Amino acid sequence: MKSSKVCYVTVNDSRLLASGAINIAGLNIPMSSFNFAEFKSLQRKTLVSCSVMEEGPLYGSAIGSRKISEQEMRLNISEAGPVEIEFAKEKFLVSAGDLSCGTYLLSVEVYLEVPLKAQGGVPEHIKPILHYSEVLRVIFRIGRTDNTVMQRAAKRHPIYETYGELGFFIADLKRMNEYVVSRLGEGNINLKDAFCETEIANELFDRGLLILVWGVTPWTYCFYDLDSSGYIMKAPSLSRPQFTGVYKFISEIENPSLVPGDFLETWPDCLDLDFPRISLPGNVDSVQVDIHATGFYIPGVGIGPNLTVVTAYRNDDFVVGQPLLTADLESVESKLCFRNPLGR
Image 1: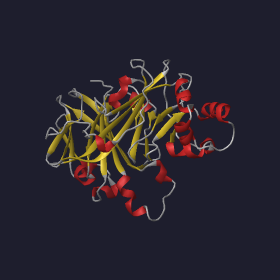
Image 2: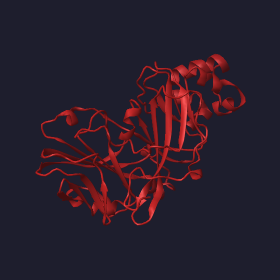
Image 3: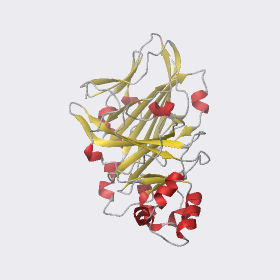
Image 4: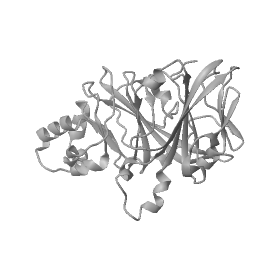
């Protein structure tokens, strides 16, 4: 079985996962076999992924995550069967099909993800509540021992960040600034106000130089840049995301910067800063951005705190010119990115 799909499970309490198990075609492996460090006894929101014979890009932990542990196990499968995660007396299917007989290598990685803004240090009054934004990331990968694709493939890393009401924008900052200077002149400018008072935002949209997502609920967002819509199942995504925007974005810009929208108010200061770059390959001049309002599962209850995922990829199936300028998470019902025993 080979798959481009990655199966995800969320849980609001890492302690539940750490006391559970993973069942691989009948082989029951306690989670105590893996190193969760202090988070086997301290609560953290947890995102678990599992892939079997994965094809295509491999997505690892978010940029700047703290690595807790990495382990490998050799498995001898004598009877075909699925892969399941067990915790809190519930089972979750995390394979797209049955694992066939043979010898496999199980790779397990555990990370602590913290928003980029917090990685450079936070004010003292924020430190006591910083843990609310932290996410324990657990990655299971299963591959044949004679298949080196999993070991050789370069990992891609999502971007975990906190955004305010001004959201974020995606651009080649140098190209964008050249156009801004040609229209508004050099010097410091509040582009947020200029977008509201002039036509420059529409001009940047029309020229394919800007992807702008604002009017968002202040929260943490996990951003996945995808090579195409075919890789949407590699992210913890929904089949019907609650928010979608489609933009003209010229294909020549393949590695733009992802920048918090707050920097629009102090343009062009952001040109001197180092922001994460994303990958948008392809020969079409349109990009689709989806916001998936998912959540962390609370066993026996349902959906707890939001896990908000953003996906972006080039797509020529939609009409451009539909920017996403409002995304109120409180106005929509969050959905789980997996099926759970309660059917929620």
